[in-house]
Length: 336
Image 1 (cartoon, helix red, strand yellow):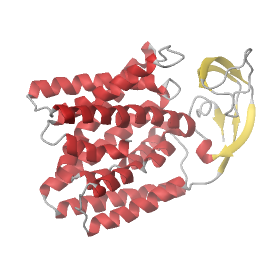
Image 2 (image 1 turned 180 degrees about the vertical axis):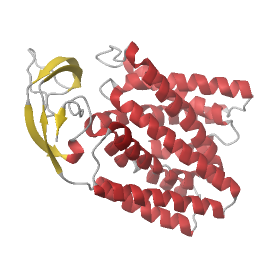
Image 3 (image 1 turned 90 degrees about the vertical axis):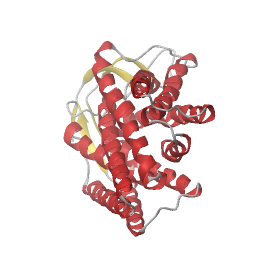
């Protein structure tokens, strides 16, 4: 859903202001985030006062800075080039996850990161061959991927909250700030049918997609979620190609090959980790089929739920990709 949004933004946002377009995208996401509570069985809001500073930070990076840079860049670099450059979000997410969150990444993934970063450089050369506008657009999209990578790593500690609650808190802030900027700057707004298209695009690409992304972070951590998410740019590039965009030079073909190899390395990472969990008492969203939560309820509970629970001391092993840095795999709680 996120990958397919790039060509939609270029089509529906043509002639509209950058902040006006971003406002409509995140207004759509806000509708999804808050509307989800109307159909959920458990309508308890899982974010607390202590989460406010983090929500403000992820809204600034993920709902204001990143989409504004992306929209600015897409209208200059094109949907096809811009989509492929979004692969760099995975690169920055992995690097920040290692540096900030100390996630464990193997040599295979570092090779993938290197290849994908080289692909970004090749795409920048391709954009330079098409004039200064393309270079400026490429730089803006790269800036957007860095902002979203910061957002991804800031969001990971919230992955134990209900994902639509994070959307419900983050998206309205982004919509409000970008709307205010659009009005202050006197930006033009798109026609009604394009506005509706952007609202729908935001609901799916920045609302539902974000909720699914947060669920993935809970399961496999920020770095590996970013790796799998690197498939999204290829969807956007394919959609742009199908829509008739053919601005694809030699360097772009080189970049495409590097991105394909890099993503393949990410997705085929193998290996198992053996580690030790100390006894701990905490509260977070969990399931009873994840190998960690074996306590019982009467009557039984199915699916995700949250309450204070105890973990006994445990030694076990599982695949690398199942090893998320979540409430049950924080480095303070276990050793490899």
